[in-house]
Length: 158
Length: 158
DNA sequence: AACGGTATGCAAATAAGTTGCATACGCCCG
DNA sequence: CGGGCGTATGCAACTTATTTGCATACCGTT
Ligand SMILES: [Mn+2]
Ligand SMILES: [Mn+2]
Ligand SMILES: [Zn+2]
Ligand SMILES: [Zn+2]
Image (cartoon, rainbow over all chains, first blue to last red; front, side):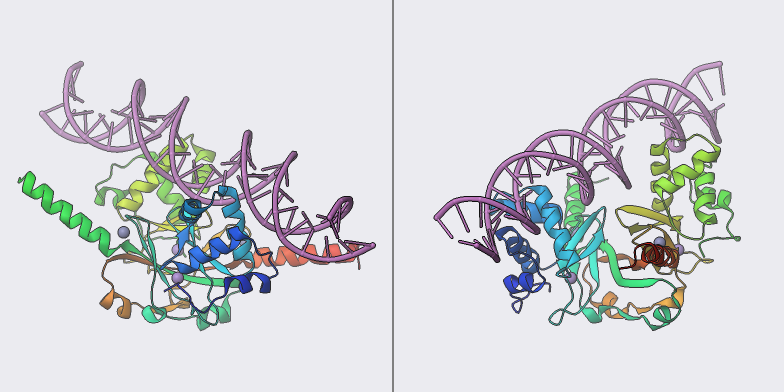
């Protein structure tokens, strides 16, 4: 559900005070057009399929977009994942991270109800973000595993 | 609140079917005795102060303890943090990660109420864990920043 | 004491992200 | 249009966190 028809990426960039470049537009389109958050490697590979780009440029673009509030940075496994930041069109929502394949999916906002009030009232520091991450094995991986299990069983029946 | 008087680490290891070694006991004591989760580097350094140990051994011990359910692995910044896994004495709870100093703190379990039912009912994959992580700047860092700010202001009053 | 299985150490490799510096590009001025 | 300025990009090298392969040491059992 990260996909967004309502976002004009060009306008998002200028409105954030960022120069509009082909690379930046491309990164925004890729992240915004995907059904779930992507990591830098995936974004790099996707841009590369059409236009050559340096890895470092991807990292720098992602940093800039996060800094300016266009993307949100999520942790999954040992890498960061990037999705469109919550805004008027996109409600903040939790994510699912598959430990097996490393894919990250967006969950519906109401999937996990969460009440921040008790914390916000007493916490002494400065709260910038609250993330809910569900870890496990996605359906695709589960199917793959059980299929492989059956194949092995048929081939080598103990 | 990770600290635990009720846990006999020696017994936890044997009960999990793991050989009891000095290194493993030490790692468990360090993690269990700290007020919040620690990353591999911090654990390594702490063990080292008393006994020489190889960095890789720390990683392998942490993996084993997580595999066998004695520790939980949390993501914070670009590293993993380790705390005692929830059990009969330790209720699962959210954590706070300070972006500035990298310290991770445990929050009270009721700090964030969260209802998993809606998700568990419809999610097609296998859910292994749900983590709530609050990011921001801890009180210590806030104080340090505002102190530095005042100092600069006094020295260079624009 | 010999044996088989873990645990540990050491070196090297990998994965993800960062930094320094040089060049290229976009945009404004005259 | 051409020069100048500031940001964006590329490239190489570096850092940090973690993993892997292989050899050795240790442990509990026979
Ligand atoms: Mn999302
Ligand atoms: Mn904790
Ligand atoms: Zn999967
Ligand atoms: Zn801090």
